[in-house]
Length: 197
Image (cartoon, rainbow, N blue to C red; front, side, top):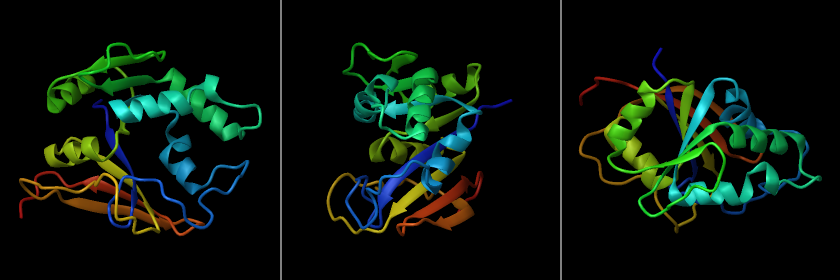
């Protein structure tokens, strides 16, 4: 069975890979919202590998290990940290020498070859969680099978952009759309293979 690759995007309305403030974004809760359930919790059983770029990897390592959790954190955050410690983490980097995080390895070189190698290895499905530059490369090369997008209700006007120059169009099919409690959109698309404009 081929390992499925999902790309996860967190973006503003103007396509920026940022986490700006908006009403309700920082609401403290003991229960996971739709975003947490759909993007992570519902996939604990079938995802065994997470691919990240260097900056995303270092940010997750700083904030989301179980060691970084506080006793006051919600149980779903603790569960997520335990899961993230346990799964295989791939850090794409030419600069980082040691991952410094359990169950992690550094890979460098051509992204298409790295993805092909990972798909041949044993394991469950794969999430690409890497920020705009990495996700744009997945889109340009047609490497992801589907995309989960969280679109925040903000036009931000700064920060890295998800969308850039393409050699050819990428066609996606909308599978689901959901509005969340603070006005975010949760969108799920699958890649349409073999479609030519």
